[in-house]
Image (cartoon, rainbow, N blue to C red):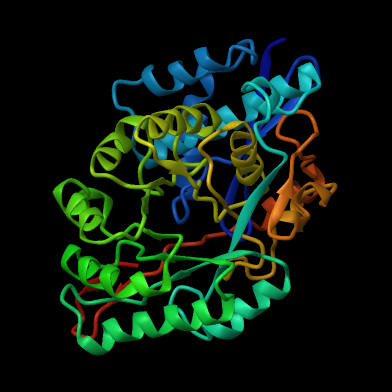
Length: 382
C-alpha cells in the first residue's frame, strides 16, 4: 500500500481537515490546524507532503520521525500541527486496514467510557449560573469557564472579586457533586495568579488552567503551583514532550496537550507517559472539530492517567456549525451522563462525510484570533 494523495479542506467555523488517499482505496483523515492560522498550517502540510507520498502508510513512527526531523527547523505550533494532521490520518488508515479502532493498536482500552466537559460563559464570561444550569440539564458533570476578560498585571480588588463571584455562581449551580474547571488563558500575571488561586480555593476547582503564559512557565509557574492547593493545568500552547518537561518539573498536576497541535496521537501518548512519571494526569485540550476529538478519544481510551476530555459541542466559536455536521453517523459522539462510550469503529472510530466537507470547503473561513486591548489602549492577552 502506498500514499497517493494529500488533500486539505478549510471548513467552518475555524478548522482544517486533511485527507490521505492510498492506492488500495483506504483513506485516512486528520485535523491539522492552529486556530487563526489555518492557512499557514495548510501551507506547511503541503510542504511536508513529499515526505509521505508514495510511502507505506503503516510505518507510522517512521513517518512521525521524518515529518518532525527531516527539516533543520522543527517544532512550534505550525509544524507540530501539520505533523499532527498526518499522524491522525496514518492511525486512521492503520486501524481501518486491521479492522480495529486505533486504541486497540495502542495496547487496548483501559476504560469503557470517557468523561467530557463543556464550556460555559464565552471569552468574556457572563450569565454563568444560567449557562452552567443548561449544561447540568444536558447531563454534563463538569464545565469549564474563563476566569475573566482582559486583566491588568496587578488588577484591582474589584476585578479579583469579580473572578471569585463568577466562580461562586458556577459552584452553586453545579452543586458539590460536579466539577468546575477555571481557565486563566494566560491573561493573568504570576502575581495575580497567586492571589486569585488562594481566593478560588473555596470553590474547589478541578483544576485552574494556564495560569501564566507558556513563555514564562519556568520559575513563575513553579511559584504559582506552590502558592496553593489548587491543581494547576497547562499545555495547550506546548507542542512536544520536550516542551512539557519544564511544566512537569514545576509541579503541574494536569497536562493538556492538544491532539491537533502537539504532534497527534503518537506524541500525546508519549506526553501522557512522561506525565505518569511525575504523578500527573492528562486532560487534552480540544475545542476543535470531529477528527481532532476522535483522535484525542483514541488516546484517552488507552491511557491510564487520563483525567477528562474537552469538547466543543455548542461552544461559542462554532456559530451555526457543529463538529457533528461533518459526520455520516453522529452516534459515536452521543454524550450520556457527561461521558462518551468507547469508540468501536475502525481507525479513528468516525466516518467523515466527505461530501459535506467538500461543500463546506467551497466557503472556507477566515477566522482570526481576537485582538484585545486594555482601557489605556495597550495590548491585552486574549
